[in-house]
Length: 125
Length: 125
DNA sequence: CTCCTTACGCACCTTTAGGTTCGTTAACCA
DNA sequence: TGGTTAACGAACCTAAAGGTGCGTAAGGAG
Image (tube, rainbow over all chains, first blue to last red):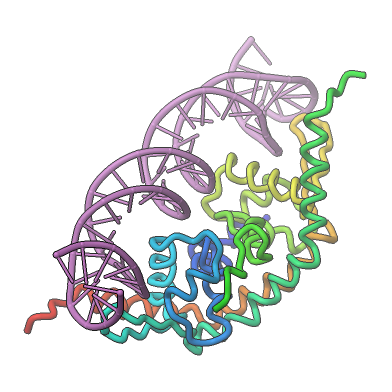
């Protein structure tokens, strides 16, 4: 019998997910794929994101070294964001995940419906 | 100027992450990669997972159609879990992410240290 | 007769993520 | 003179995720 060989703190799965699994992170990266873009422009492109959440997400991405931030100190300020090479290196891998979802998410949604239905029906004839 | 073209509820990124981004989910899928495995065996392989969390994670995976569950009603019970073909189709994509982390996470960790250090130092000479 | 086993469910509590609202800066324009 | 702008920070609140501990079935070992 094996002993515990899968560790939460060491496993690379945990590491990637720690980076990209926040609610808005993947969407912000997605918005940055096209190249340098201003704060306000990102906000316009992502439906429903609040200023706080966008700022927070960008700050985290900057801290992780995936995004670089360039401030032009004018009034009103101009702040531009760009993917770093590290950030760009993640793109193709994320795209694969996205493609999987595009191809299979309907199947997942169906499985959920069936699973839920099997509880909501009355089992007694 | 573009209008919001990235939607949280529609984007495939959200969909995948909704499936795999829970704390233990990726690790459980990882434990299932080798084939059919019993509940207790998964628990042994994943360091620090509690019974409740494992049960909850497996149930969610079953609901999503990624894992199938087979109960042998003996006492004590035998419950075996296997990846479905849908679950298996996700494996290579996740593996890519894992490999990215294995190759680049050190860089991310370094970026974080630098970022944090730039705040903790006293800026006044 | 009692304890151990496996794979849970249930009730409760804590921690974290996410969200809302308000204030701030200073140049520009009417 | 005073409203608008872009990109935030800070305070506060709510919801959801995660964690701890207890109870349970029923057969076999001692």
